[in-house]
Length: 248
Image 1 (cartoon, rainbow, N blue to C red):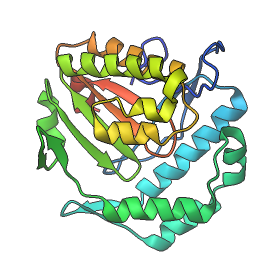
Image 2 (image 1 turned 60 degrees about the vertical axis):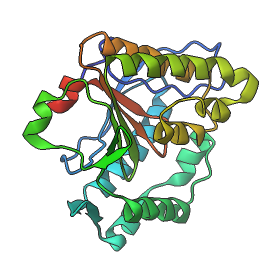
Image 3 (image 1 turned 135 degrees about the vertical axis):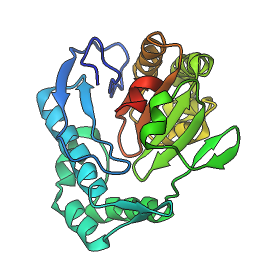
Image 4 (image 1 turned 180 degrees about the horizontal axis):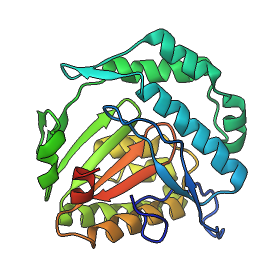
């Protein structure tokens, strides 16, 4: 994955869009890759204390992912192991930094609901299909689909679709001041992504504009389009070109 300046990911938590930030490169904890692992090497525009809290929050999610396996399109999980991971995490510190209200039990309940409800499918032109993995992904180019894991949604768009998505992000940015960030997200034509973004109360114009810029940046690197992952529990997202994603 590319570093800042050549990065495919930006995280922007911005309540006031006129504030200027200094980008700082931070790596979340490395973990073994498992099905639907969402370990993210993150370029975050936050101070050091915020970076530590965010990295810890992502690491906790990665620990949960590392306990999961897939069978027949569903997660195989150990509820007690997941509970242990969640209850080890200090949500008070995270809540204070990000103005959230997670408790150990509320996060555990949300995580378990997502895990139990999960199906390993993607939607392509309205039809559900199993998402292709392994060597077949090496030829990924020009695809359009959406899929998800327990803690993220994933969207693939070809070149024209990526341009449209970037424009929609800019449109949402312009609407933030008049209708609010959550309502602005509803204008994005990818329902699974719009729903997640609409659930975040602390994003604003700069976040959507930054999202649009990184979609365009990666789209300009290839004629194949992009893939973006959006975390369901925090505003972290990751963007790749389709060939890059196929080989990650």
